[in-house]
Length: 257
Image (cartoon, rainbow, N blue to C red; front, side, top):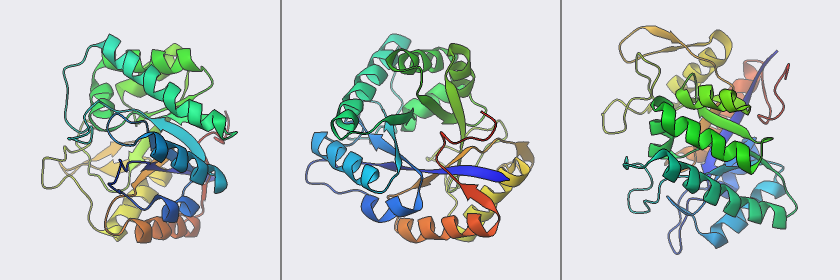
């Protein structure tokens, strides 16, 4: 039986600025990654998003990012491992306060944007993030780019990990995501995105931009909630996974664990 989690980045509005269609997408996903105020989000948005996720029975994770509201956390910063550790502990703790206040339990932590991508290739940052998550709560699941340094270091410190793949991003030969600065970074066809996901789940392969297949483990699939057709795609991929006999379950319900 094939199985996968569907996650979505949420709670990324800030003050008077609204981003994404969180409420509408929640019925189609199993895990929500909620921004913690550094790259996006604010206390009121965090509270509301936690309440909405709990009302839909969607599992909640912290989505800590770099302190860069202007750049939406997508610009690399020269941070030390200690700074990465402190940022993650701070943000996970902040979101966990709202989750506990609403009677919920945090499921996972998934770094955002540049922090996520840097930790995918830098062992020192990956280790710092993994240790931060473990020391806050060793029962939390750490989500990282499939096969990345973050996955390796999460396992090394004793955390449960989930290998994440992307429906709307293209891949490089080394398994990293094509940088958003390149014109071919995004998969713009819904049908192509669905085919890519189903193949990653069932065959454990994805076609790189260099034209060769690379091995990949797909335990959770990220769909983005801020695109023009985000809601339509969320419905489409949920239906397509069902038609392909792939069970959609929250990442804490992994088989054989």
